[in-house]
Image (cartoon, rainbow, N blue to C red; front, side, top):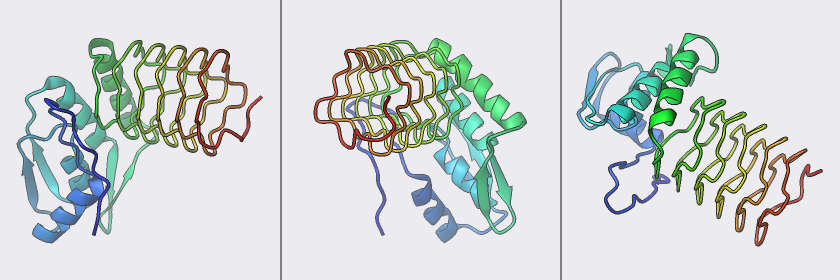
Length: 222
């Protein structure tokens, strides 16, 4: 059994763990209806796994920004009979998540190695944010301002970046597979080495962008 676990940078407090790993541990050592405590919960991965598997959860986190992220992620999961959770994309939970993310984005600029997968950051102001190696898989970043942000080696696969401002952003080595970049502003962005397989770049502005060594830059570019 193997999991895709990213390494953390020196001094980083984000000891990231895949939800699948935590689910396997929770299923092994607990039963449905029991309670799990995580006293260093970070961005709430253990809580998400508990909600997915119909376990009760108590989480403790010192960093108020990560506490808000964890709360939003956990609230965005609806447990279903049979122990399978589903991320909500509409309704009050999404609004709670969006509000929390917007508040955090306005006050925090460093997101290295952060787990923001599935986050609703539509319209967020994240100018010059440090998102190196962040997990933004499936995130909603529609119309977000990410100009001059550092997204090198970030996972943006299946993210919604329609209309986003990525001008001057560093996307070196970023995973952009199946990413929706329609009408995005990528002027003078550094996309060298990025994986663009099956990305939708219809209407995107790539003026002055660095496209050296990109992978799969073939589909839907006008």
